[in-house]
Image 1: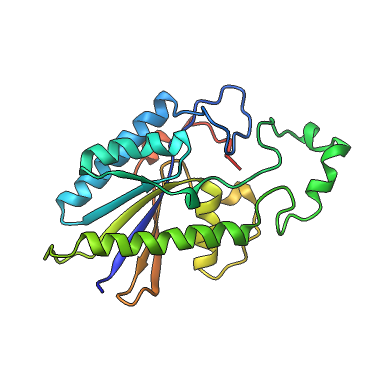
Image 2 (image 1 turned 30 degrees about the vertical axis):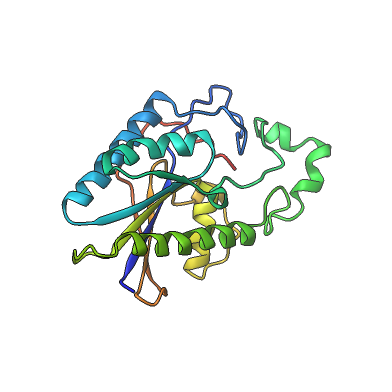
Length: 226
């Protein structure tokens, strides 16, 4: 099988005026800026395809913000959006709350803060990385299968629209780094692209990272989903 690339695309900015940790909550949609980010990413992938990239498969988390980020790319590349539950946002005890230092000092939350290595407040990092890695491998195979008969020179590519923490945990795992980390130091900005490049036998060759919508990041909201 040929070399293949799976792009993990983080969704765009979310309309979240209350600054809550929205996690898996429904009805959190892209802001106007987030929609612009999604259009910019669609143009990025359209130009990539124009230069010969064979992007043949597109999937997104079931959450509104991921589906809305995927839509312009779907239209630009004429690809169906497949929904994959395995690339959904991480579960988080603090979902729906505005997580401030004052809130975290409340004794009722302390049992959830005892183990930042797992972490004790949400879905284990290992579990996140494992489910996304399984989705990545399936997407790789889907991209290869759908490119069959296309005699282009570039390896097939897939795009998975997901969320910051699952993407970051997957990257840390792929690079053999510890999964526990400071959330403020994740290299995974809004609509950034973390690309996993695989050899023809399915082994990981390298991880690449780009920010096609970097020009739109100044002033964007930074509240993570988890």
